[in-house]
Length: 163
Image (cartoon, rainbow, N blue to C red; front, side):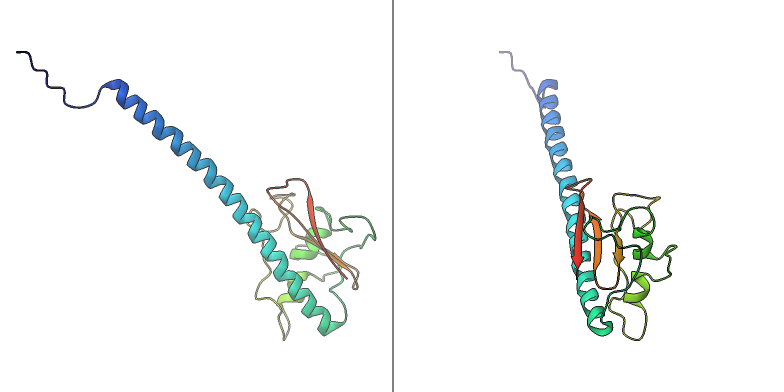
């Protein structure tokens, strides 16, 4: 009587199991990246809602919005471009005039925000880091535009206009 004691797995069985694990892990990584993108976009939308509320409070107290940049009527993004001064009006890197959303909404005796939100992909809000993921602002005092982009819709400006 010839008894064979096969203990363990064959090489083919091990390769099949390893390839199945590899496929499942790559699907999980792709799903995780999609979830991260959606989370960053949700944060951007939340940031803009927070700024919009602060802008409305500012308007109620001052009968106008902080003036910065050159307002271009009826042409999106209304002057809030990725180059000067749209980005500078938001963060205050080198705004001219030196009125910035950060200074107006976070300073003074009644700050409307503890700190100005920053894009999760561009925490310095610098065009040198990213032109796409840049929070921008422009206002003539009676109208304003907040401009940003979502990762789910690259290249398309999302515009919040207040008046």
